[in-house]
Image 1 (tube, rainbow, N blue to C red):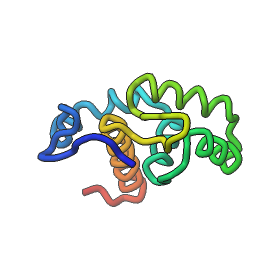
Image 2 (image 1 turned 90 degrees about the horizontal axis):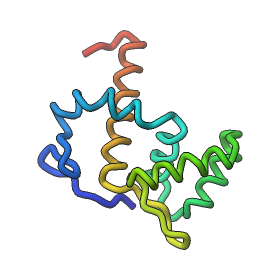
Image 3 (image 1 turned 90 degrees about the vertical axis):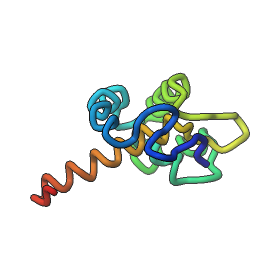
Length: 118
């Protein structure tokens, strides 16, 4: 479940198109790879509580559960993840915005590495 409004090139008051190119490096320095992994998993797995999601990630990726919990706590404090103990974790509009920027950057990096620069 994703909460937030994205339309007409804006997300939570932030520009998605030309402005995001300028914000991209700054925003990507604010989150680490484990936090991007958590954001991505929350956006792709509906119905999992935060505890279930982190436990699964810890087992699948051989990552310490305590590290994942700390990173989720940071994402919640930044307002990127909405979490209630008994309800599935969800991304806020800002969380979706950060995830989109991270995913776009990854796609661009892969294109450059493969020699498909547009």
